[in-house]
Image (cartoon, rainbow, N blue to C red; front, side):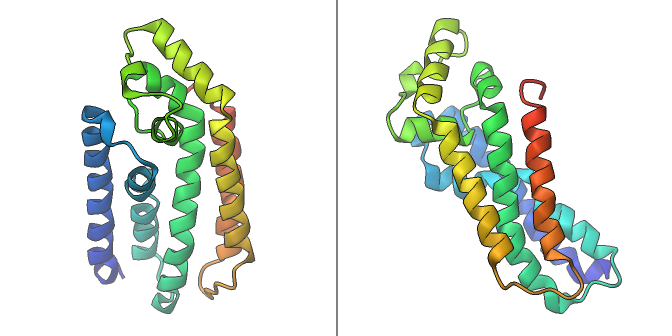
Length: 186
């Protein structure tokens, strides 16, 4: 089973490395910040596809006929995991000079803040940016997206006999609750 999924694992791992590189490029060139880019690349930083691949490599009961359905669901679940991470780490990342979290990118794209506002060495500027993001309910936009994706995943007719897709999706509620509980400590 390992060799059967090795090329998929390698491809997904390359996507993760590309996501990491995109984050570096974005932080070095904040002017390019846009939601399409961050929504395309950044969810791969959650590594859900590589982790699922490892599970599949060592799951002899997995039916490869279910691979398309499983991956279809993982696309949304990986994004949901990223949303939970973004909404609970963006304030710390802002202070560290990491501007790749969705709420920061969204605030830049919507001109709630500008690249010139971003200076991790200037505590007043960081407080000002944080206040603007909070006052504009930017996090709520992402949590609404999370809820919509959860509803979409749980209401779809996706079938996989060898994987409980419903339980997989349900587990994302636990992931989000852990992310929220860990806010400010990660």
